[in-house]
Image 1 (spheres, one colour):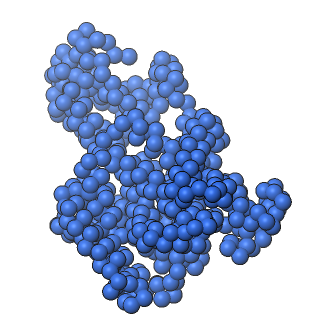
Image 2 (cartoon, rainbow, N blue to C red):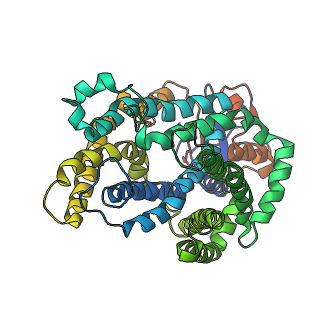
Image 3 (cartoon, rainbow, N blue to C red):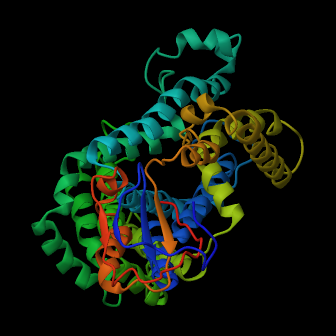
Amino acid sequence: MFAPAGTNIIPTGTYALRGCMVVYLNQNQISNIMQTNNKEQRQYYVDWVRILLILTVFFFHIGMVFNAFDWHIKNDQQYSFLSPVMSFLHLWRMPLLFLISGVGTHFALRKRNVGEYIRERTLRLLLPLTAGIFILVPVQVYIERMDQYESLLHFYPHMFEGIYPQGNFSWHHLWFIAYLWFISMAISPFLKRLRGGWYHKISGRIRKLCLRPLGMNVVLAPLMISQLLLKPHFPDETHDLVNDWAFISYNGIFFLAGLVLLVKPAVREAVTRYRRWYLAEALLASLLWFSPVTTSHTYPWVHLMLSITVAWSCGMAAMGYAARYLNRDSRFRKLANEAIYPFYLLHQPLIIIFAWPLIQWDIPAWSKALLIASFSFLSAVGIYWYAIRPFRTARLLFGMKVHSGGAANGQKASKAGGCKNRTDVAAVTYLSAPATGKILSDVATGKNLSTMATGKEKTHISPKEGQKASFSGAAVRR
């Protein structure tokens, strides 16, 4: 489509191509656009935090086999020292996942309207949740109750007999998917208002506060108020949705903080700049939380406020340090980011499948834990790579994106004389800024691309502005 540099001269006049728009820009403009789009559309550290958090969930559930808490299956010898450590991790790892999900929602909404957002969330959350309830959860409940049923097939007709733990029907570790879908649907009627003037006015004032040292602590107020109001009525974290409103509202506020605040570049930079402040706050709050003076038995409400402070400050410290040191791309990030959601869906049933026989072996507990971790991790990776990743139906059921067409189809369309949903940016040497200023703004912000791409809008270049501008042959595809 483009000739080598110096061989073609841009004629003056009006340009309109069937199915595509060609914008002629110089190399600096192209570089600025690429940097702007990369900065706004992909924050790599968010992916890294998500990957690392789900790996902590994996090891957390292995620890549940050996600690003193009640869980689906337990080792005969349990270790009480694990309990406070795992309780501390539980304070902030799942709320931070909701905050990360809020950040992801912001970037998803840049490319979708509300209807498309609801459809995408339903496909990637509700469909895997439903599939997991019927495919992944029954094996876990069956292993817990093997003495009551002859086989897994014999268990299936009984899976709707009562609600777990008394009955058989459950979503086990998939509660996170259920809650995330529920929160996504709950905010969807209000998403259009996120573009309103009053929203920008109010959120702008809040963001100014967030730019100060420890400024993101403004979110502690709604977090604490929600728990003071709801904890007396919903004291336990049940994961059953209908009797868990304190926990749902708590995680919903984390989600909204990611959606509204942390997505703004100035706020991200402030969290990164003051990451040491948040870390110091997290350490101090954690020491007080572990203190025997402020236990949940002696001062329950003080302990609750400390728990909220620990969760928030740990989350902010983690985001600040990740933004500083992990905001980089790699091939492994791309592979891991795509695999981590199916890995989350698979990990707990595989842990239970391998833990059931291994906990009966007469070997040290650390050997059991190592074997459970190795077998379940390798099995999850193998199932993903060979049974989920290559197949369209499996990708849908496990919440992965399904790519239609591909690069080959795009090349065929280009050869046929048209392209779909695409902007080609050709570098130009002598084109003046007035002729390209509005186009450059539109490309950078994504405005008017739909009408330009269909040829409904035409770009005019005057004779004076189009003097001997040569192609560089570079193209950028959106």
